[in-house]
Amino acid sequence: MTDRDAAPCYIARTTKPEKNYPIVGTVICASVDEPRMTKDNAKAVAKWIREGLTIERVPAWWVRKYFGTTEVYRGEEREAA
Image 1 (cartoon, helix red, strand yellow):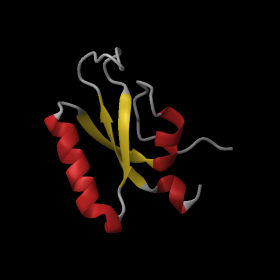
Image 2: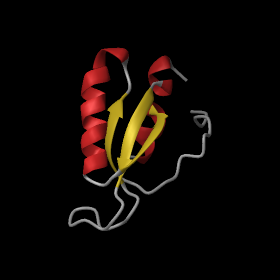
Image 3: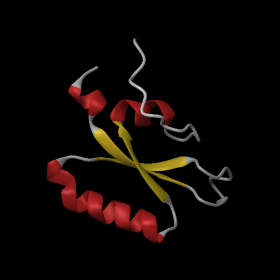
Image 4: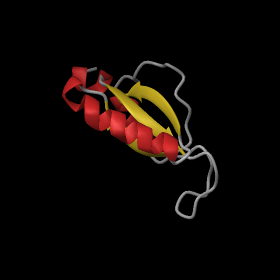
């Protein structure tokens, strides 16, 4: 696993059915948590919260694999390639 794979990300999930995302719990937004992006991440996460989305923090590899799904992150390590 590389440092980029382990980079923490914020994700946002739907909390109610939406026109484009009819399944509750779908990951629809993500942002890598990097020090140089602190203000932008804060703005994005605040916007997601105002829109009624739920926020989680997961590693980048997980976002790449499960974005757009309802898969739950359980703290697992990345699967061997």
